[in-house]
Length: 317
Image (tube, rainbow, N blue to C red; front, side, top):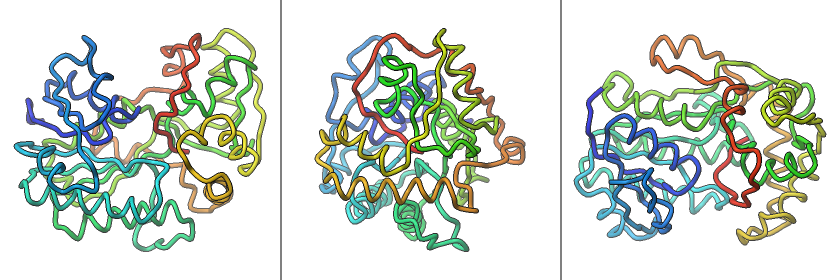
């Protein structure tokens, strides 16, 4: 892998972006964090990180953000409407094109349908595919990664306060659902692995953790990591959406009824679709892109389960 590259990380203050900045520093690269929340990077852990603000609707600010860079790491901002998401992807892609970026690594943040399965009928996933297609049509040196769902979701306001206060893993995963969660640090490692791999350009890669798990496996691992007995409580997607909107999503300005309807559609699809967005066999890809993947149990053991953070962060699944 080519070292010491200048890598622009969009949405750098999100949980995903922070993991990417951390792993870029660890790998000897120079991350430039695009965010309006510069204070997040004013700690010794992020010493030397360049921070710049940009607006997805302002091409001049995007040009400044990517000027002189080798690589772009881009993931769409979540909790936004499809038209804006498509526009953001186009504007960042066009700025990358003008700057002559040598590698554009797109993290779709979730599964998205291959062209043969598009449209899949689920709006969020179809929008992710449309964003990928926008970037592909620009002719960028593009690598696309499609994660399943993130281990780090259990550290967000979707789950962590209830785990700590009530010792309950409350989620809209059906008890029979199977999934392969991946840590955000491992997502970042895949993105970094693509920096020096010309053979990956043009590829769309589903990425996931090393294990296929279910709610009982998660419950057991969390109980061990937290030192208390955690029980699992299934909530319907609509009820879970109402619960999370009332607790914190309202702070984002998302309309309640629209959010609940969208979330219900998204998670009903995840629970029932034969396309199984949360499951993937990783061994074939690991032979092509060797990354040492972390198990959920090991991830859970290194988390802070004492402090409740109300930061929404970036989640998927």
